Image (cartoon, rainbow, N blue to C red; front, top):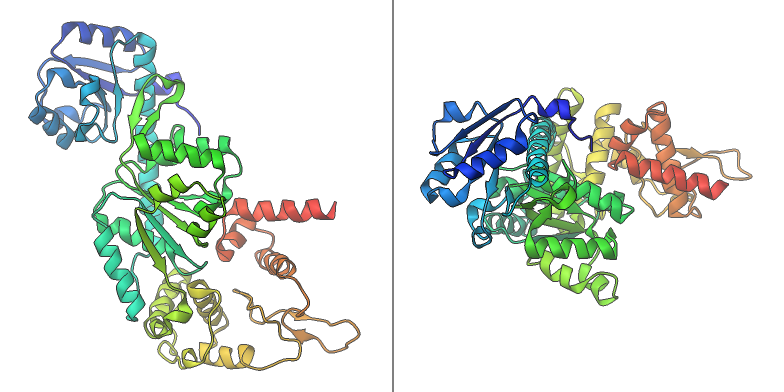
Length: 457
């Protein structure tokens, strides 16, 4: 994460609130020349117009009354750096804010102020990005099956709590959607921040991603941190999370000040975490802390009746995203009554609808034409070929007639590689666009290409 330069710090204004002259003098000496505006007051004021002139308030809690602190917090939209005594650390007001404990020196004060201002900038950037991205993220849980009704009930029941939640379910069932719905229903004022644990390959990267300036923990302050693929984290990273859940305190860069985090933690896994724990593949203590509340998102095969609402809903959403008119076949779905298990879950349904919209063919016609006809070469693995008008044709050895689908003797790894390469080719080598279509991150796609390259070397 790129840090602010000394020149950039000169664009900020700081207000010091303390009734102790010695404290005012100490902070003024430490910060003179570091920021552009530096003022001191003895009496806390809740004048929003006055406070709006500053980016950071340094508040001496020891010399303020509780109601004065509350009024400032309500009026001020910037960062607040607190000067505390140890017996005040458990106060609700301290949660999610930088703080300093005496005795202090100039270096500690400067570093704490830099950390607070750095977070202010990164939070503002992330807020703008989140407002844009949230237009494309849905939080509506669609369906009226008994399992979906129970899931909706759990979301409303768990949302008000701050307790960590563990969500389990197969890939493509919508675990992130459930986590977003919980966050939205919780009323938390901070953002919803996603960390894909499968993309974190080292403890140093984990530390950078979560704890450094602009890291996920600071960005998610007063909001929700969603750890997707929690089963992928290393043993050392598991210990880091235990310490965080235990103390909810993060050291600023250089360790000169501490930062209390107010974050709702939601983790998700495609595997049964308790089984991994019993096999000594995951720390039991961390599992117990992460799973104070547990949820399971059922696979689509266990709630097929939801398709009656899902198909029209997803079709309309995809039409908006693709700037396409709503098709005439919006409600012409009868194939969901077939006994097909949808191994790709909701993600497979989305891929099917998107294909049909692009090639202008109703799902009924597509289903019966491409999926329901038996073939002697048919593979038992269902492959997503979104954005392709036909399933790939493969020329079997010794045959003049191309077959439709992948050979049945191909491994899943071979099928995955072939499909990914076809999607990348479709986007003329644009891996970012291909990754979005495949539902994976660009880093994951690059990693797969590196693995294939190393295998061929």
